[in-house]
Length: 114
Image (cartoon, rainbow, N blue to C red; front, side, top):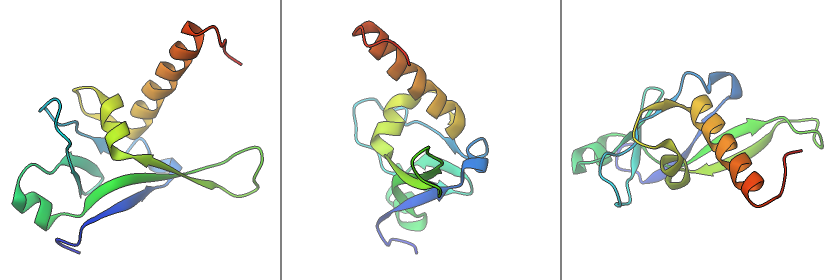
């Protein structure tokens, strides 16, 4: 759906290592992202925003101890791109970076690690 606006892209857990996010080089601007294959790339031009589906959210299905079925977890693109830094990362590496950041913040606040 070209030019159809933003949507969510669902990434199965077994494909997290195949999908990648390319952060925007321009710091401080709100960037829209587009899907090209299994890549989430900045949509910098009007043509890119028109010809490729734009993504607001990434939806992962996660197994949890309290559910017998995978639960959808919605991650906002602006949050993911903020965690990414400046280098392209696979979604599995990105989520690992996010996990380490949260653990460091908890340890810094005296929350400890379970």
